Length: 120
Image (cartoon, rainbow, N blue to C red):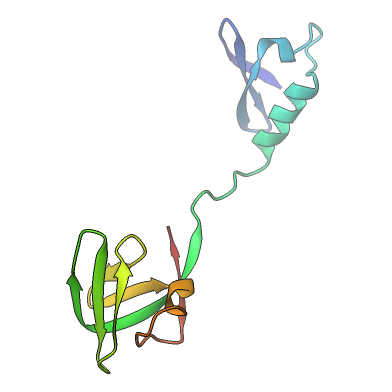
């Protein structure tokens, strides 16, 4: 473990090719780390978790999509079914609308059976 940089209150350490910051008080005079310092070292070793969440969507090929207000869109399917959806929940890609699966179950519009996972 080597000290790369030192400020008034913190130290930048390098251990096994990973860099991490600790508070100065987390390092003892003999160079060993306290419990908090060991925790910071362990967090640097563990890869970071994904922050982007994926949610399931179903695909709806629509015949007509019309914005009826800033917060709502009317989607009409090729079979004549139509329903109103909130614009905050719908994603449009070319001539396809991606609708969350939980919302599809509540509405009556023609959708595919295949589930698409999209990051939100």
